[in-house]
Amino acid sequence: MSKIKLVSPIDGSVYLTRDVMSRDAAFEAARRARAAQTAWAQRPLAERVALVRKAGEIVGQTTDRMALELAHQMGRPIRYGGEFGGFNERLSYMADVAEESLAPMIVEDSPTFRRQIKRMPWGVVLVVAPWNYPYMTAINTVAPALIAGNTVILKHAAQTLQVGERLAEAFYAAGVPEDVFQNLVLDHDTTAGLIGERAVDFVNFTGSVGGGQAMERAAAGTFIPVSTELGGKDPGYVRADADLDAAVDTLMDGAIFNSGQCCCGIERIYVHESLYDRFVEKAVAWAKAQKLGNPLDPDTTLGPMANIRFAREVRAQVAEAITDGATAHIDRMSADDGENTYVTPQVLTGVTHEMRVMREETFGPVVGIMPVADDEEAIRLMNDCAFGLTAAVWTADREAAEAIGDRIETGTVFMNRCDYLDPALCWTGCKDTGRGVGLSKLAYQALTRPKSYHLRNI
Image 1 (cartoon, rainbow, N blue to C red):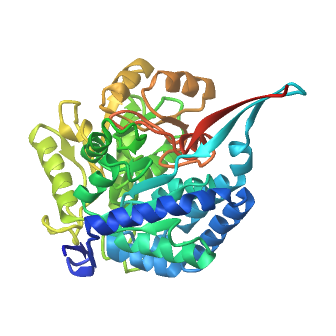
Image 2: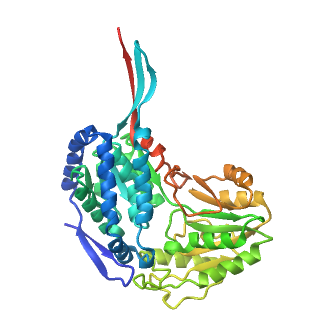
Image 3: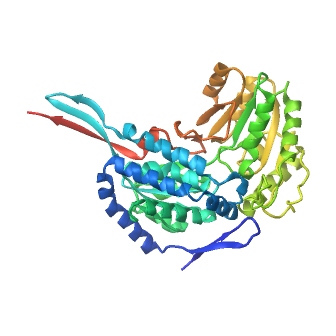
């Protein structure tokens, strides 16, 4: 039996080891999930909602443990207290809107006809969750999928295996049957087999472009829906009328927080030429003020990257950019030895779109900053990208922000904020970010199928 070793980015030690489930056992788990789904869907909606809410409350009773375990697994400093705030916000909103979102659409209800469209659960939903925000990204789909009457199989990332276990503990303690929510340790081949042989009915994947392509290949010809969120290269644009200090503080936090390991983190900033020099000066000062170090130290503001291979890619992009003429403004910090997982936050100027650091996803604590002459240049550069998840516009003019947003190829447009997921708004993207609908009332449409009823009295 093969095993997965979770290597902690803190010091390279093995934090935990888990057996990979065999193919036969995985298919048996999927069979149990399918067998349990009918009874689960027949439970009253209010009961399903209450059980999911209870699981959320149980997770909230262990936030100190959550913060400590996340530090060990993926390097986020304990000072930030885990993820329960965002986790609870998302779960609670989806529970709040469930009844309205899942209500039948009544077309006619007369003595002669009842015509309506109901929302029916797909059946077994496979959630393949990432490591960078492991509680929040998982609950985005797990909560509404269960509430809608699906059973759920969760395959969590190898870097955050313990998160899937903690979620399973909470759902079982709340009273959700074990076959209704299952956390499985799966390899890629078995995951592809579950999809390709239609052991599951819906797939939600968050991760790399290559991973999303693998999911779609596995589902080819099965007609199983595959929802993907595959990252981004999200831009910020600072117009001439922007609040400079607010723009610097928020955009730099959006670029550097979580060691830059956020799908909707800011990776490139375009600043109107009239503000450019002052923006860069303040951005450099902001980055220099960070304390890079052990995430178990309460004074640490920036922990290690989750895996050494991620750190190597970030360093490679920065080195290539410098070779091609970019200027790096931050000297290497003491915790960064040039080879480990601790990566100095970096501000790059003199960058161009010929450099990988301005085109490809970096997913690290690095941001490139370019001056622009006007809105037209900013829009052109923001759209010069293979990804389309979020974009942030900094301005005092709401109408201008919306007009610019209409022209940006992206899933979400922010004005005067960034790096945030509003559970009332649809989380989606375009281009290589993938396709799919998460959170908001629209998520319930994605996690269910329409079924039409044309009932005639004679």
